[in-house]
Length: 396
Image 1: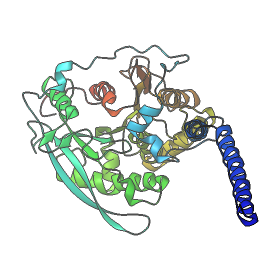
Image 2: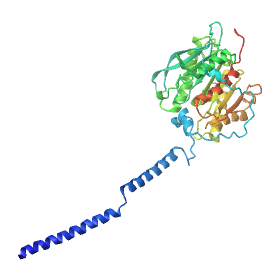
Image 3: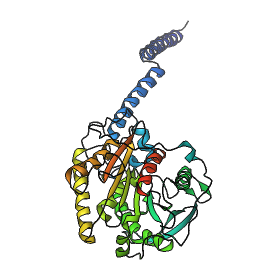
Image 4: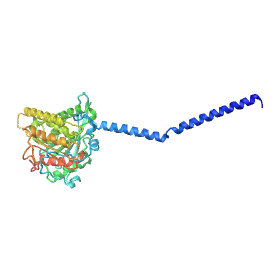
């Protein structure tokens, strides 16, 4: 064997040895690394912890910030609020004893023998931004309606995510509350009345506060004159003086944001409405439910507004408030405290313990176990309306 051949073989042996050592080192390095599934598991765990921290932050845990009505639009949704605020029954501290609450008969949820009609109306309004938009409202006309007699009117406001059809349904597709109205009138629980359900139309305004303020004016300056000028009501005229003179025959109520709007009407237009049915919301919304400082602000604002309305009316101005909520509604305590504070801080409001206003003009009742859903408000509305619109002889 030549010297060149021996040198080549030696060189190949060295390369083979080096390659072997490199292969063993790489295999050893791979063996020392954790399996891919272990790495993926650790990554998922880190992501889960980060997601949990984000959820806690969004839910308001660990914060003491106070938010007024509409500061978080999503939190006012009847669906989202009930889903995120489920929990134990709200402990109602110092709950006054209330008597006279009636259970809504189950049969009232089914179609009645005599049924009222629902018609849709449109009305044009100008937003604060100067845009001209058209809104819709539904008007419930009681069975047996006649232009020869006059009718009380109840304005019923939906909550966040709702529409003018939330309570009454479309004209050709009635919902449960329309059946309830039919039965209440047919059975003599209340005098025949016209019921109007406007829409709030959140999308048409720059923010929630703007919507509240604009809707307040739209209802009193556009919708009320339109409805009470078209149908036979107690308003002899539809200017402000005519509406003031007929305020004893006009009520307003609502659920969630509609409840907030009801308190707002008391604050801004007590000279136009005598009866109020706020459900599951105080004047100002707080994301955790009840906030004493915010409740105090709301109470002062309402009292100042009522005093201003008394000055405008320059006459006796009776007011009646039937506030209500559910025991598992996260707005229950806030709604109750709003009613209590008004009765404790002013002679304008006296607490009524019998719900019939025989001993006062403001009261509150909580239905045990009820969460924050508009369908739970049917009992609240039923008990308010039988007190607002008591049965009267035909023709009166």
